[in-house]
Length: 331
Image (cartoon, rainbow, N blue to C red; front, side):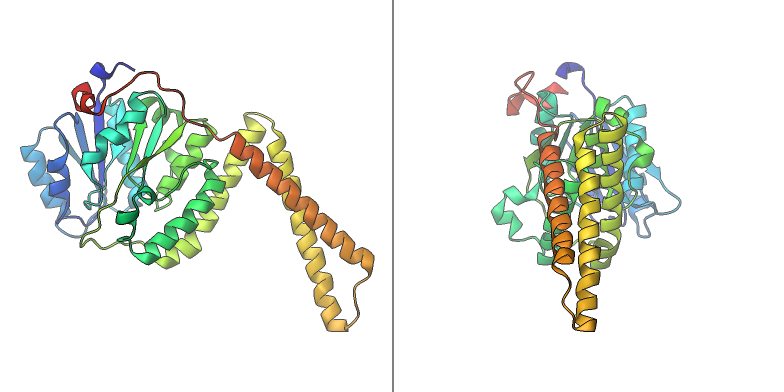
């Protein structure tokens, strides 16, 4: 990558952010070539604010959805427009002002150095800022991060729901944009799709900003919608990466381990329940069979997870050195 010839686009998904989006757009550095704001059918004055800003700022391009598609849907629109504009690097900055644009050089550095194709913020590296995160949001992030590690295969990343993202054009063009989840599982689906393509991903310590914005994320969405979505991502990744693109023992261990685990649990559970009902102890052979299949399944499953961790795409060695003060001048 020749930094002097690179073009950077910032995609700003907007939904009911009339009070914050102007400051976000105006705070973006002059070396950002394109600012692509996607109004996702906001019901407040976001559209009017963006139209006024577009008349003042030539690099700002505004697009709108007639119906709300979710943050993922807004990002897909923004990604397509960024690619059409010829951007080499694309960054996501939310319109609600929760992301410090001063951290853009840090976010871009791994991509400029060639160490990664995708960089994301990690709020869990800043203890002081982490203490200000709402407790339910903190708990939800920890749970979802662990689930995302399994679904995406990126076991070395944390803070999976962090939406401060940067990606190279090559990596973005390698994944099917239509497969990106439209909802709040957008970040999770991006990781899953990138893992299938063996794209290196890095975490970048990045504090979050919490002001008077109201999150539309609900606990019910997390509990009921995320697990099924993550399970589908996991199965799709397992099937494509370890069966279609390359036959691997991981798929054998995972599927056979899951089968043994399910049999051991169901078989053992059924006989345990029947013993309670009849007050007759299950035969020793029945107990041993249930326990043996459960343990065998557990061991195979752990082996599959271990191999998946080993196969997780890791950052490359730097191809070039970018000093912090050089990053703005590279655009």
